[in-house]
Image (cartoon, rainbow over all chains, first blue to last red; front, side, top):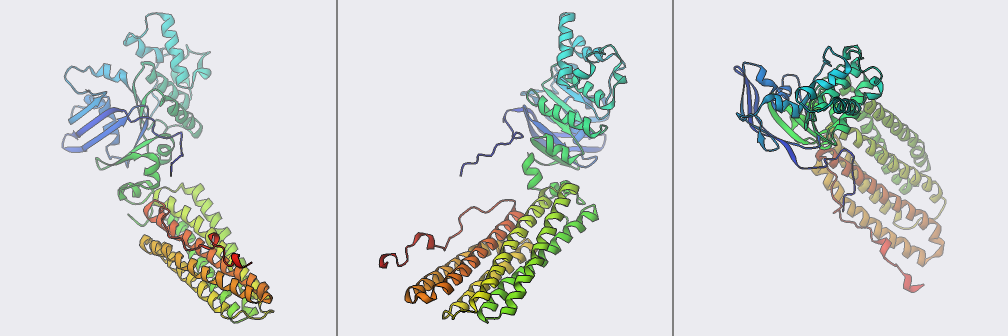
Length: 265
Length: 239
């Protein structure tokens, strides 16, 4: 029988954006990520789930070389973005991070005006040739962050004066301002109330049109709501990676099932 | 897989629902077998007990639906837990239908005792009911033990019930053609036989649901079908 089911949350492309091969990460003697192989798809929201300390954030940070800033951290294996090795000698981590944006758990706007929060990245990367062009980028980014209507009349006021949910959307707008291709989100909603969470989730769904989004979350329901693919990490291993609907109804690995159903793993 | 949740209250919620399904299954098994016995023994009191007992089955179904809605709202079940609550919902509504058919059989018993007996029919119907009851017992055991193989065997056995019903269908036709005074009784008996055959289909649904619960996938539609009466023209040429 032809399957005519179509869900909005289906994977729409099979094009890999990021490919990790044989990735091992160590913090000194601690083996944090053990031989992870994964293909992250373009224009897809991928959720990383797993208990605390399972390595999901470590792996996320490896994708834009945030772990470079930690002296004791060492990595083996390769991670490629569009087929280019991001750890190759000639790659500038700053340029990489313009392509692979990141949003953190706690909203962290710069102690600057709302306008400058957004304009900072495009300025240092020279993405705007004129003030008018910069204005345009700022407006477009704030619109993408679903916060334009709330801040358009007070762009000169400090970003730190916004509410928590607004600050987080400001940070997302800041992350998209440099026209990234991948957006990494580490627990973007854990400090937000349910309404702000829903706004951010709605935003993630829209961002998917243009970017590959990877979200680390402890909220199983959030992973189920926003993602098309889910990866379950346990003790540094990638235990299971598959279509979100499948993982949450009929996971293959008993460890995944134990975790998502709230059983002692 | 681990059996217990970190939240023990969640386990207690699921166990309570499970206990209700088992109780409901027991009541329905008794209803189907006793209604058929009441027909064979022409025992109107027993038939009346079955009719009254259906209220308890309906009440249990309602409770189970409420419990399931609560678990979905409060616990957001996933994976195996999700399949459990979905299965419980479907099993309870299938059981409720089997209960209704038994009640209907009991009602017809009250009418049939006022008519002459159709030779051999009540015994045949009791055997049909016993076959469905045995399937139901195994389907419920398969549910409790999460045994997909046992559920599959139940699914295959529905064919036997269909064949028994076919045989009865022809028998009733013969009786009606022989003597038109048999028509009223035979029509009632035929409805009874058809209803028990339908009950067998509901038991098959339960077995399929158990397979989904265990494997995560519904079995494909390759089950042999034994009911041919819809395609045959018994005695049509003689009319």
